[in-house]
Amino acid sequence: MRWGFLDNKLVQVVDVQHAYAGESAGDSWVLCGISLTVHQGEFVAIHGRSGTGKSTLLHIVGGILAPRRGRVLIGGQDLFQLGDRALSHFRNRTLGFVFQNYYLAPSLTALENVMVPALLSGEPVHRARHRAMDALDQVGLAAKAKARPGDLSGGQMQRVAIARALVNHPALLLADEPTGNLDEQTGGEIMDLLASYQRARGLTILMATHDPSVELHATSQLYLIGGKLQAGTGAVESAAN
Ligand SMILES: Nc1ncnc2c1ncn2[C@@H]1O[C@H](COP(=O)(O)OP(=O)(O)OP(=O)(O)O)[C@@H](O)[C@H]1O
Ligand SMILES: [Mg+2]
Image (cartoon, rainbow, N blue to C red):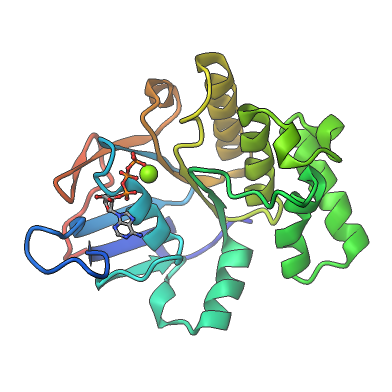
């Protein structure tokens, strides 16, 4: 889906601050004022040491976690102004999320895992199955459609997770270390695959990663240090924007 809104700003993160419940104020803020704009079609990589808050930031941008302070707008829609049902619906239509640990349902086959978002979007079963098969085919896993996650390798599970994230043709893909558990070659293949979606479909990608091969593809590289984003190029903005 291509979005036609003002200035092509797909993601606007405005002065987001977050501390987890149970932590007291002060030093325990994980995110200390993050402002970021991602334009349609960009591939933004977020680097940072373990525990700096990359997953926290992606979960907030994905509407999975509400920040203590600040706003997140996707296509102009303020995520946390939506009620639970409307937010779920918006996420299902607009966002794909590849989680750090895949989060595949172990009792479902690869195909069934990929079908879930399509079914939730209201597709009839036969159409959801067709779309899920197509998505699995595109990540090179059609032959494993009937396998359950326990019978797949890490790279194969990662591909299923990517197919599930892309089955509804989201405007935005949030990917949390999608190559983190993979060997260099498999990781490189996953990175190439995601970059090909970005180029061919105008998919916008916000990715947390430690993987240096992202440099080949990312349009901006940012660094999360001490709860703040530091720029490689372009995307970090002041809270005023
Ligand atoms: N649910 C939670 N409850 C309390 N603290 C949490 C929770 N999730 C994360 N944290 C803490 O927040 C900080 C940031 O965690 P986060 O998972 O966002 O880091 P990360 O940059 O993704 O790390 P990694 O590279 O290891 O995945 C860490 O100190 C972590 O312990
Ligand atoms: Mg993480």
